[in-house]
Length: 263
Image (cartoon, rainbow, N blue to C red; front, side):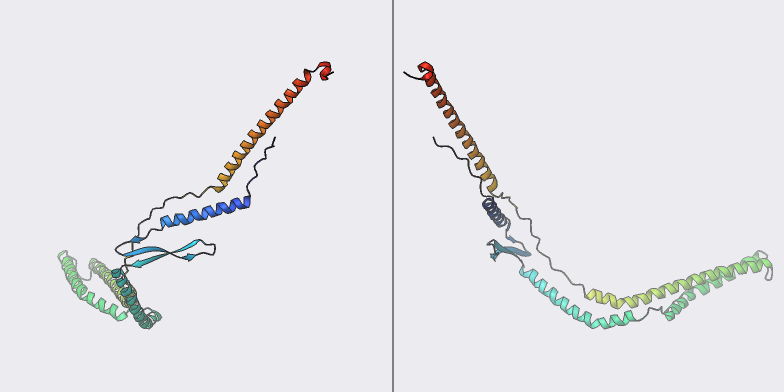
């Protein structure tokens, strides 16, 4: 009776290599399903194989192209940026001069603004003075009295505060005007450096179907388990047969006379 042999365990190196090959094949298939070319009014997106990697895996390239109209705008934008860049280089010396000059308010302009405001304030306060004198006279307060002097001093204080406020406003206006003149060259250069953009293609999300790799390790383990089960079953069957044969032999020996020996 042939003795059954236990199944041999698979070679782990060969199993790992087979699993790696299955994973790589799955990845290539997965990419092939996902690399969907797209066509839009603004441009296209195309996938092409450009060769192979050192291990033989296919090597792909994604190429985006603009539509003719968008390509024309793109070329014009580049030319515009070049022209504006050249102008910016030419004007950089001007910016250097502006930034190299310490900022100082235009005192003459401040004086000019103050003089303009005085043309409105002087007549107003002259009328206020006449009105106050008339008010005091009608109230019986005469020049030289303490009440008259106090009223005139109060009016003068109000006038001084009004003129101080006017001078401060004139200073602020002159300061703002000087800052505007200083910043204007910088603003012009900044504006030159701005250009119109090109509408980029808006590609949609492509389907991403899933592809599971072949479970080489699991298949080999299942095969090994099944082989072990078959081996255990055959071994049990052989043991049962051997036990039966031994039982028959003992029965036959026990039926012989004189303890089992014939005469």
